[in-house]
Structures are given as C-alpha cells and as structure tokens.
Image (cartoon, rainbow, N blue to C red; front, side, top):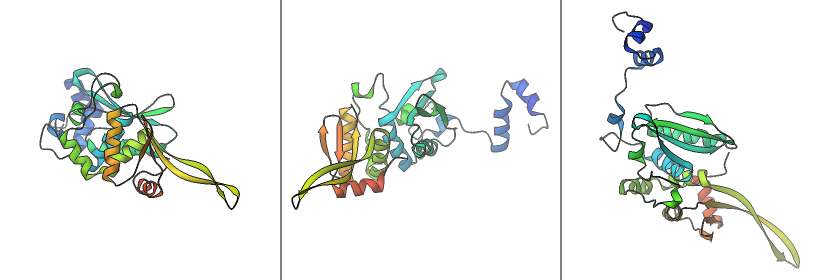
Amino acid sequence: MGSGESLSSVSRRLGISRAALREWRDRGARESPAGRCPRCTDEPLEASAYSHLLGLYLGDGCLSKHKRDVYALRIACDDAYPRLIDEAAAAIADVHPSRPVHRVQAVGYTAVLSYWKHWPCLFPQHGPGPKHRRSIELAEWQREIVLQHPGLFVRGLFNSDGCRVANWTTRVVGGEVKRYVYPRYLFSNESADIMRLCQWALGLLGIPWRMPRPNALSVARRDGVAKLDDFVGPKS
C-alpha cells in the first residue's frame, strides 16, 4: 500500500477485506497470535485482570472450538447488571488486548465473547461437559496468580455465581419482638472443586464463611461482609 495502490485494488488482488487492510495500514500489522500467548512464549500476562477473568470463567464461562483451531471464550452476563458486563469485557481486553471483544445478545443475558487459538492455554480447566462433572484444579502458575490477587479472583466468582442479599431475623428485646436486617453474601456452584477454590480464596483474605448447603456458601459475619464489600459489593 506504500506504493500508492488503492485499498480496493490490494483487496481484490490479495483476497483480504478492505477493513483489515485499513487497520494494518493505520495501526501496523499485528504479530501472529502464537507470538502473543503468555503460556507459549515469554509474553507477560496481566495477572490482576487474569485473576478476575479466571473467577468469571469458573463461574459463568466456557470455551468452544471453532474452525482452524480457534476457540471462543464466552462469559455469560445477566442483562440486569450492565456494570458487570462492562467489567467482563474489560478483563478479557486486558488479558488479550490485541483482538476485539464482542457482546452478543441472548435471551436474558449478554455473552461477552473473544476469539483466540490460545484460550485453552490460559484455561487448562477446559474440557467436555459441565464443570461440575469433571475435575477442576488450578495449575501451579494459576495458583500463584490467585495468591497475588485473591480479591479479584473472589470478585469474579461472586460476580458470576454470587449475590449480596438482605437477610432478617427477630429478637426479643425488653419483652418486644424486634426485626433486624443484615447483609449477607451467598455463593452457589454445583462443582465441589470450584466451591473449594472459593473457600481457599476467602481464607487468603481472612473472610469467614460457612456452608448452609453442599452447593452454597454464606458470608454473614459483619467483618466478613465488610471485607467482601471492599472486593465485590452489590451487583449493578
């Protein structure tokens, strides 16, 4: 294109879209995806964003294979919480900044989507079938990242499969029954392995928890709720 040949002419000759040629002209051609994979090369990984994205993936994420060994990373986000949709898109963009992040509207939710051949390198937990029907363990390098950024990992988990609710109880004070309302966090997941990872990360943060059901975790003590408010907070 430096020779003065038009975009249309180059597009017809090479069989490459004008949009792609225009982007290469204006920004410079990108490296191949293999050259940017932090697991295949020494390319640095944005650890804080990855810790957040890992929590989102374990909660509401999946990988699906497409043509030419390209994988789609999808994070399903409830349409009722537009801020969380924006956060998921930002986390993906920070981890893999050289490709666009798409938002695909579905019934009741938005799929935040990114295509890359190397998503399985970053999410070795990928496999056939639902997560709760297979083993979910973190690789050592993933554990090291969560150890550095446990709050963001917990944020991803609770933004996916958790909530902050108002509970109430009654007490008799001075002969009168009084109602007390208090906040509580809940996290639910059918995978015992993912539940254990949530418990582990909460332990790193010094947040007490209990298990009212095998698939549900509760944080209700005032100090624990206050700490989670710093890392998670109400959905919006």
